[in-house]
Length: 541
Image 1: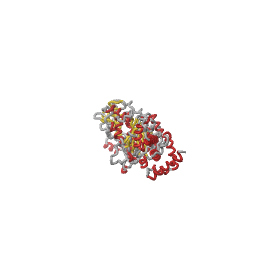
Image 2: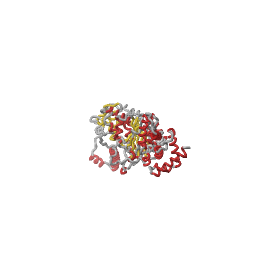
Image 3: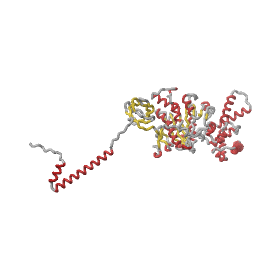
Image 4: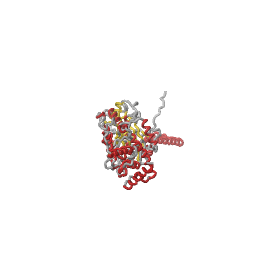
């Protein structure tokens, strides 16, 4: 049998010799085959070059680590070399964590979600992104969580092109960037605007036992900012969702939700979300300040925030100090509140006013967290349980309350009528204690006691009824100058309502002058004339 035919490669010289022996027709056929082969080859080569250009491999470095321990919302991760403080890290199930504790041998991460699907040995990747939240006007009127995500069932944030993001932790304005606090921020509460005035850019602590009206003061202040050009951020820390729903509904009823953002970290959420909430709210308010606008932020309350941070710190195995709080608990709140300021005109002239709230136990203002916050802030509004039980609303203790800004944050009219108010109240309280002994009192002392009772009564105020500054000026002047001395205590509230109605009808121009902060002898004389006319022709009838 012969050998089977085998194919062998045809060399170029042999191909040329074979073509030379062929006829013209055969040569034409071979030429056509060669041309088609070259075109097909060129097509495949161009396609291959396109694929190579499209899927070109590039080398990239990524910080990775592995989970060593996880539980209670905290993960201990080894590796992650080069990770930044407050950097977001991602776990295999898509959950994000926050690098909070940077140690030589490990990174302590607090989880921003559930830890059910995270196990020891899982690979953790660094994102290179410091945690931030959305800021700007699209958040007004919305209820969001500590990450800036809407939780009010109203859909995603509107105008996504206007939404910018801002780191939740930011350096406080320097001394050069700041301006003195001299512009008033009206709370609408007579006892505060007259005796403990607030200014834009100030940090005023609201302190007292639970359930005596701390949140009510903050809510009234937010409601009073309507048409004042002040954007409000209300941060609810560790409260029940039912309480938050009531507060949101109150804002909506009084038209305050249009210029307010509510940031919620409820009691049911993880300590990490409670820890982040005030910083997220601060970033939202800070964006308005640096844009040259005015913002008011309420932290309700920072005692629960400190408890959440203590829990995280103990889980991260940090050493405990006084009352089991970590050593940096003071820095935790100081770096938050120092960001509130009034900027100078060269930096836009915006402001951020802070109203932190802290809860005391049995009136103990010398506890660890309250004393920390008292030393950080620019004054405190102290609410007394004893006054609250006596029916005085708001239950503000004038003796323990103070504003370190003082009259610099009042308009001229309010400063003129309330200059001696705090001293008069203090003298009345001393006389009241003296009168309890049953000693015979002279006529002048009885008169002073009666006037003090009426001043005290005029400073009481129903909740959710903030009062314009012009109305406050009128009623405080009337009480301090003795126009209420012959009015029975139980009729003081009625006298106030009728007086304000009379002035709005007959002396609206005078109220406009007081609203603008104007005060001079002629305006005072006009006010005296109006009060005398009211008592003679309206009240006595």
